[in-house]
Image (cartoon, rainbow, N blue to C red; front, side):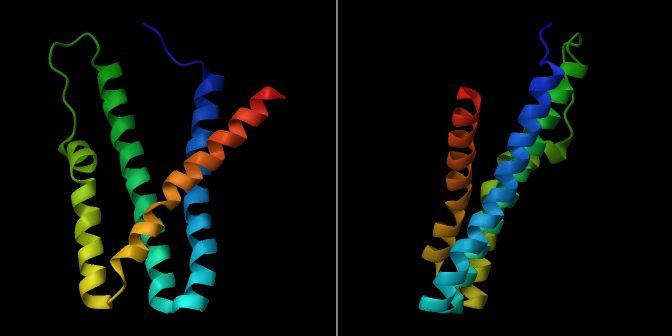
Length: 139
């Protein structure tokens, strides 16, 4: 059975940590000028979107980690058992994010488009960390 070397596992964990931190950082950096120039609701929407993207990333990571751990631990068994919460996090995270966006839009009157832009912070963070990793590995 192949396993990931310890050094690679630590590098993956660092990369995941950098993506998570950078998602919130980019969201906050973008929210400040947007809030100043376009109003606090737009700034709040950007940051709320980034926060939801962060939750999405964390839930996805937890779900994938739990599935990988269960499959590794139960490799010899015919039927592996995975906690229900794992399926919930993997399958229903988009529903939870959609519900959160709806509630925030409906009751706080935060523009949906600003939250959608905030959700893009995860993609931007992933791009920045990936490019940084490419240049770092070339050295």
